[in-house]
Length: 203
Image 1 (cartoon, rainbow, N blue to C red):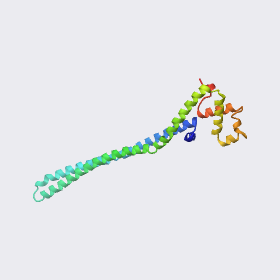
Image 2 (cartoon, rainbow, N blue to C red):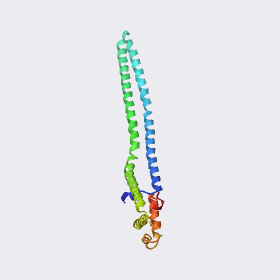
Image 3 (spheres, rainbow, N blue to C red):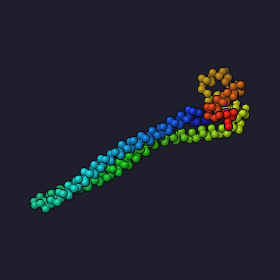
Image 4 (cartoon, rainbow, N blue to C red):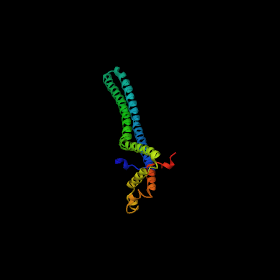
């Protein structure tokens, strides 16, 4: 049985499926929310770009005063420096906007993948095995549902999967029940635990 024995059966397994789906959806939504908050920082990049544009316009305006006697050269030099600062600010704003966009997507992926993929990698293969076992058992029950050997095996399996307090309540030798009058009761209980209808209920 291995790790498959750790999985619940019947309705409890459906509850686990629902919880797992909710877990995955929760982290995807949280990742999207965090990514959205980070993308909001692009407004700062837009503001920086506007400042850079304003600096360029100021610098170009100052450069037009280069013909003023005595101070023209100094004013023109200051204008070029202001213009260069504006160009640098615009380039930095564009680079930061791109970095913020990339970071937002990385955060979304990491938050959606890291908490969910390990769980899915462990759970889904076991879940597939459980489904295959259930299908195989359904076929077996449909073909040999009233076979005493199969009924006895199911009854013994019920005892093996039964909690200890219930097992002790069966009597001094519970496995006698798997061969006695309670065999059918135990076999049907095992089928119910696995989510398989007894042969008499098969259509």
